[in-house]
Length: 246
Image (tube, rainbow, N blue to C red):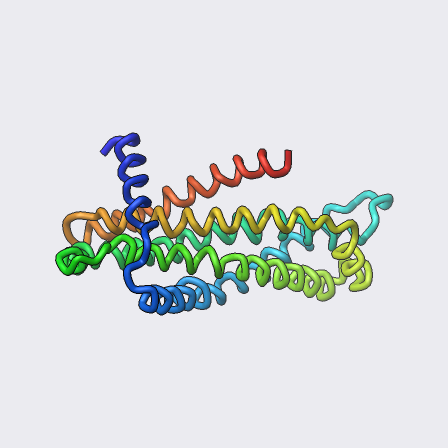
């Protein structure tokens, strides 16, 4: 299938997804379940990666501050800015594209090849809306919370690494964390996080929904979902940074 055909089919797919839910109670129950599956189950990997990212950023910054004219609090400042602007939004988004995206594509793809989606269609259910819309809403809702947790944990990891490695004092690190805070940067990163959440869930669902064949094709669809979601996240990151920080 050509690139243009893929885009057209994706747009038509989203048109089916964003229709009015037939049963609101079931819809909201699905959202709660998806919040747990997509968000709470991803909390562990987000925390672990954020701790190490914050630690590495702080140590690298400290070891490269060779100029005595540069103050020590720049370690905390750099760790905070790196986590807020890029790592907790883009890098975590790429990680979730691999974990959550492959899971979504495999789940929906398996339902397609086992004809469960066909059964929903026969019963008159809009399968795209029923299966995909709750995932998108759940990810858009919960991912900003994962971002905030990632920033907090990353800064904490940087503080612990600096303290244990004795590269900068706790007071200087905390001063750098509080130095010259620009609230708009948080809003900018939250916008990116929401866009990335939409990309991950919608693209992964798209590849899973239109898979055909057997288990081998489901695996290929999962791979395509992760690769294309990652590419779109990087592209969206570039575009949003140019627009929002211009």
